[in-house]
Amino acid sequence: MRTFPSLRTISATGALLLVTPAMAQVVPGGPPAVGVVKAESRPMTESTEINGRIQARERVDLIARVTAFMNERLFTEGAEVKKGQLLYRLERAPFEADVEVKEAAVAQARAQLENADLTLKRAQELLDKNSGTQVAVDSALASQRVAAAQVKAAEAQLHQSRINLGYTEIKSPIDGIIGRTSVTVGNVVGPTSGALATVVSADPMYVTFPVSVRRVIELRERYADKGGFDAVKIRLRLPTGELYGQIGKLDFVDIGVAQDTDTMTLRGTIPNPVIQKVGDSNLYELSDAEFVTVSLEAVEPLKVLAVPRAALLSDQQGDYLYVVNDKNVAEQRRVKLGQSTPDIAAVTEGLKPGEQVVVEGIQRVRPNLVVAPGPASQTTPRAR
Image 1 (cartoon, rainbow, N blue to C red):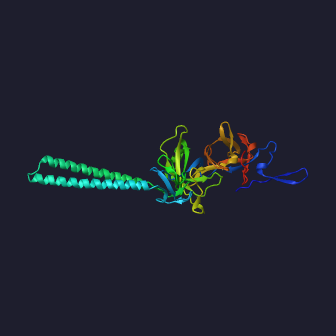
Image 2 (tube, helix red, strand yellow; image 1 turned 90 degrees about the vertical axis):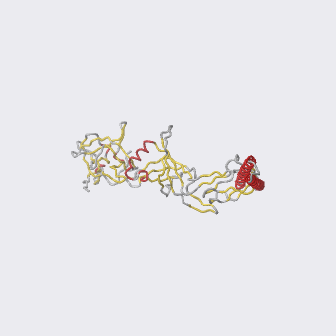
Image 3 (cartoon, helix red, strand yellow; image 1 turned 180 degrees about the vertical axis):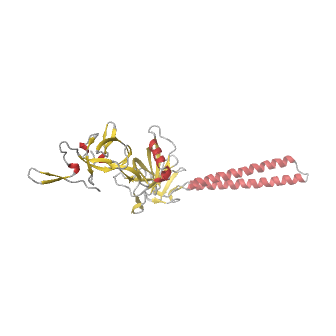
């Protein structure tokens, strides 16, 4: 890199002072010294921050499907449960008795069917021997069909009674974490009692967030040749401000647009491993319905034309910066900015690679002013 010669001056006490190019005072009638950097393409991880919420992938409210007294609660609130695990047991005796009644009804219907079968057989035999009539056969056939239908009806009622008996045992339909119970043992519960408890899956979790339609289209077009939304990764910032250590993947874009906000709901899946075990319970970093900040980032950094943010100025017309041409004249350039970081800004329009951009001494520059450019220092303060 070319070094810019230091400027020396003598203080009132005779001491020799050393001044950097960007700090040098302008000699009356001379061009102001400025520090410049070359506009270059550099990798930048594009990110967009949006408010979102964590959502369990599976969520089940446990509701009693028959009316009965609750006899037992067989789980610890807040503990993990497995699919098929027995959680509540309701009073079974009335339902067992009902099953026995229906079993008896089925046995009775089957006996009547057997009798009807025999009657039909005898009537047919008599008709074959010319000792009976067709009317008797038809009557016996009708009775046999009625008896067969009564058997099916009795069997259906028995099946329903057995289903109701099975409902007295409430089991978990999924693997997950169960919340607190809303009804204690000894109370009557039923379909109108509401949720007895809720089970939610823990790992992985969903994160849902609204994104403007314009931004969704931009993302789709930008990553179309890079795998579409597979080229986007999801990072989370927790309510404490801490960055979550796991990386998620975008897996769903809603088919409709919210008319009041002109946004679409996007959803990602992110791991949620156990961070601590306490007794029978496991603690996870993410919880269902938790509020988080979602950051959408490109899987691979994008190449952008970037300049230090210290080079940027703005007014009512927008953003601009100063470029020093080959005649050392400062030109004002209106620019359009893309994704930026606290220190670097991406310029999408108004600047070409290799052009010299003023970053130091910018307060002394005016459009079409001749300046004395030199390399900027490595650490450039941000513009205010």
